[in-house]
Length: 131
Image (cartoon, rainbow, N blue to C red):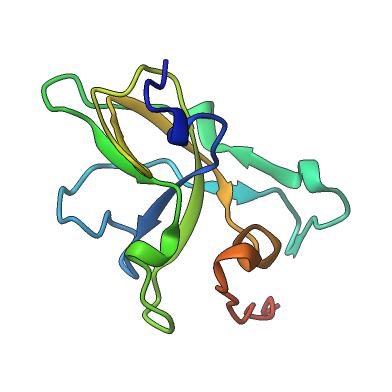
């Protein structure tokens, strides 16, 4: 699947802008992961609360694919409202560079946590849930 040795066994990230659109201006339509709500309250009781709305895969049949990276610091701007997601691939990358791939079929699994991003020195403030 992945050809470059340095890209194998990596976590892949997709960065979205504050408007929930890809930051490259491609205007792809994404299905965002969310936490299950119970009434007005969010269910944080177990990690499996994360789920994919209709398990949607984003498919780009007429282009090279969307890009994913292994180090969010390459494009993430602190305090910009950007969101960092962990992505899952379902297709072989069409192009590869060290730390970056383009894939034609991918989905967002969940938003990256501070624990996921700690190794990159990225820490974000978590907003409290409003009732």
